[in-house]
Image 1: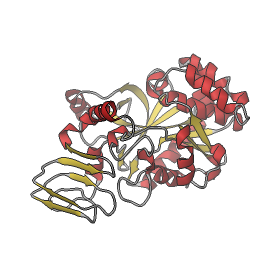
Image 2 (image 1 turned 60 degrees about the vertical axis):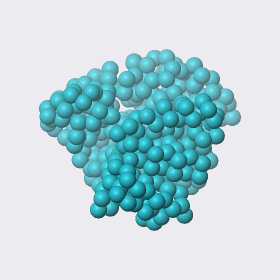
Image 3 (image 1 turned 90 degrees about the vertical axis):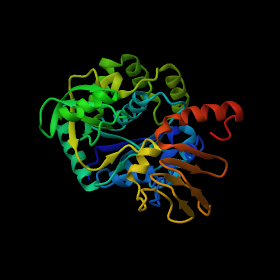
Length: 357
């Protein structure tokens, strides 16, 4: 395994769309929502460990999740977990990792991945990532991975390619189009879902920060001398207090002229909602996604049910519903209305405080 290849796992989100199972104290990336016996972050680590040695992983997360990261990834040393004092979206997260790697290894090549995606064909996926690494090694390119769309999904960003080659220069990015535009993208054939997985040299992304997000470049390059010292956490606090929240897509990828995409077909989902979990779950003959034990359904169709282990649920007469039960919260919601979960959270928080959030 090449020692200058690194994997950065972004694991700082709360996963609020998976409430009430995903909580501030135990967010989505540390849960086994699909019932595989492993958390999302564990699957992510194992997916990349055949490409990158364990000592070359970094996890960027909120500082309150550091112990959870080390519990789920015991192969990592504490210094491999970079702790954000507050979430500032993906650009500051990636900048913290990139400048950390530059100090450690000026020739570092980075894979950047979310911690909570589903990949069905992992061998094919690793082949795609290896191609991206090879291309990024030979070119000062900002690589992203595109996914061939299977439906006009309005929840994903889209990437337009400039030609039909496996690796293509990006024409443009479009964030979460409406249904009509998403249908046009699907019919056109030039548009791919943006997976949010990136590959580049640490030096190349640092140069992009200097050009397109100079304020972030000044803050994080100024942090480099403190990295690995007792002063690091205090300086990180000040840097994150000053830097503005912005995504890497909006801040750099949509502006840069050296962005390339490798398109793949390896069974990807960002598993961002209960609806996406339903799509990828095993179902009974009535199209219900339910636990193996403890669920008794009558006249119920096309629903998803999540229960605590040892809990019994008897459900009758539901069509296309989400039912999520936890020790302290029960949510029953039509699948078509799961975008209301944020509203549910806000109202529960307003009336009951943070204890159920």
